[in-house]
Length: 242
Image (cartoon, rainbow, N blue to C red; front, side):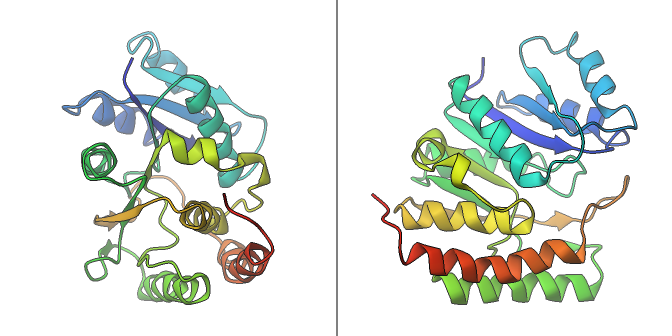
């Protein structure tokens, strides 16, 4: 068993799922993989289960009924990872927008460089996004600036979803109290870790928009992030972080 588990939420990712799993398992460091599938009607879960015979004890799947939200998928995965005694718990997309090679750099940031939470950052060294329309690049970039302003976090990419947590972070955060499900989930997890005094470190990555499959992005997700961050900041004023 590896000391690291990579959580990959899926909904209709049949074009990508086998390829991403094989690339992760080909890396020089051993990572286990946990798929959280939200009832994909395209057979994503079936592909994963067929691969489990090849990758016994390294590939795991939790099947949920229906689309329950990105945040709840990760919370489910975090709890699973803690229950199974992993020391490093990763978030990663299934669609190759996150380069699996960067798992090694995120791992190093936590295992050797003192980070409690390593963040694959699109904006720490310029704007490193490929194949996004300019409107989306600007929306994401300025959303991160806005979140940084409101929360006080010294993080360039506050909505990033490619991350490595040391298990102590997820043990400290009350996962059942995390309220947001979309982009604001990513902000809330970083902000909560930040408020508890954990060390957050950004690792520069190049984010490449998906080539295959369908994006799950929507305007409502950004709306949740923009209004949710004010709620987060306000709530934090009345909460103790020990």
